[in-house]
Image (cartoon, rainbow, N blue to C red):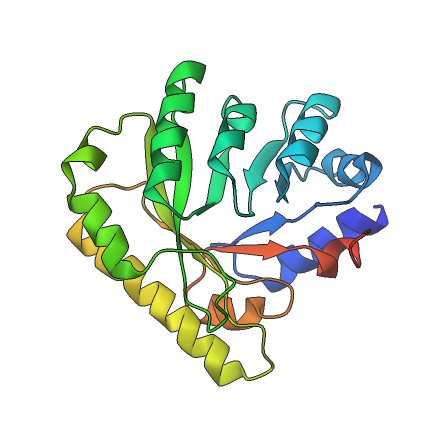
Amino acid sequence: MGLISDNIQSFLEKIPENVQLIPISKTKPNDMILDARQHGFKVFGENKVQELVRKYEELPKDIQWHMVGHLQSNKMKYIAPFVHLLHGVDSFKLIKIMNKEAKKAGRILNGLFQLHIASEETKFGFSPDEIFGILDSREYAEIENVRMIGVMGMATLTNDEKVVSKEFKELYSTYRDLKSRYFQNDESFKEISMGMSGDFEIAIKEGSSMIRIGSAIFGERHK
């Protein structure tokens, strides 16, 4: 195996089978992704629309693309025809744009509610009450082409594992609340996307179902 596929395989061997690995290929060249694909790995995450569209157009169509970064609603139209999952759904405005563009594309778009769990103010995301308000609204009841399948969050960038663990616990707790109040009979609402290269072990311990790994697989980011 090549280096990238070796790195992915080593990750798969040390995480539980019920946790999905999303290799984050942002800024990485196509040949790295192709190396992984040739060894059976076909799920990748990107955080810039322009780069995601380019890679979608240039690479084989059996690759499943995840959008992991903050998405400006006016760029939704470029990825709506093909993106598999949006991890960072952080506003009701975005949900409405997703619905509009998914309808145009004749498909259902999957999304995760992004919760603001970190102490940094720069992180995007809802509070739990904001999500409850959206789900209780008549406007949300009219959304037909968006399927919300779970939650996502980013912990504070800190070496204090207690802080990270507490924030991931909060995310898991909100997921449980949402599941019991709004999605009890929805089998697709099951994903908790939390954990990156520096904190994925804590995230798995706290109930993550998806980890987003970039530098630990692909090396440091190309500027």
